[in-house]
Amino acid sequence: MSKLTTRASSINRALDEIGDKWCLLIIQEVFWGINSFSEMLAATGVSRGVLTNRLNWLQEVGCLRKTADKEGGRRMHYHLTRKSIALYDSALMALAWERRFFSTPELDYVVLQHRNCGKAFNPEMRCRQCDREVVAADVSYRPGPGATMDERDKKVRRRSSIAVHEAPAARAVYKNLIHVTGDRWTANLIALAFHRLHRFDEFHRELPVATNILSDRLKFLVNEGVFRQQAYQHKPLRYEYHLTDKGEALFPWFIAIQQWGDQWCDPEGKGKPVIASHDCGGELVGEVRCGACGELLLAHEVDFSVNEPATNGAAN
Ligand SMILES: [Zn+2]
Ligand SMILES: [Zn+2]
Image (cartoon, rainbow, N blue to C red):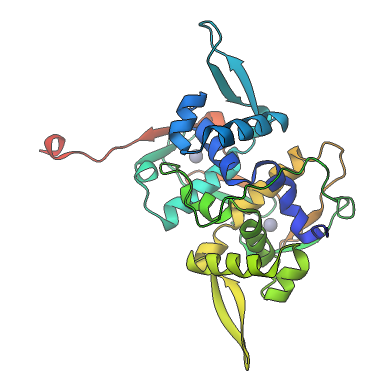
């Protein structure tokens, strides 16, 4: 079986651990304070078997830990670890993307408040060195020290066989982002588009995937408004795939996931498979900051509150 190339592996180190649709959903629920098995079952709509499997997996890779509650110890609770708390940056960028492109009751009324400046804010990703907002067009890549070593090891999880078109659970907060990225191949295609690949053959050269699956996923991303088709040849008709604004706007989320993978999913210290440079001349370090005061955001300095719209009774 051919292995993923370097370009693809830069994002896959992280996705191999948490990139499955159900893993992303579970971690998101725990972020929002849902942490018992039965609550998760209700919140995610996943089957018992799949939930058990993914909870075991997430413990194995160090993203969840389990404790028994005080009374009798029969009910288990799942908690974030230092490793999964570090996914906070990606959670904020996911939230920013969802809010910009979708209207979701769960998110529309959430107010993020930064304790340090006291203001409501939108999170944004900026370059540590030059302070400019991070966009895909300003970033280039070169192989890093981990490039040749990143043969995917034995611990690669078996991807879910769930079709990408099946909507994940109903009330997931980042459901649109998970819908678009929670599949190995769609996530890779978007990542490769950030590396400026556009054509079917270019994608196929990078990914060990059957051509019918590749066509299917490309079509899916066009339908979701992440890619748009652009004809580059007329006889026969051939299309390139380019990111739309909605697709481009996923870039900070990908960078956050990639940075997390570089930091937390490299137990043998092989180094980064890919080094990203910003056009200010330095290595790109994307920092998730408060849009109101510009400071770096830390999980314990952010408050979430829900600002429900006034009902008729309350308004009058
Ligand atoms: Zn910069
Ligand atoms: Zn602030």
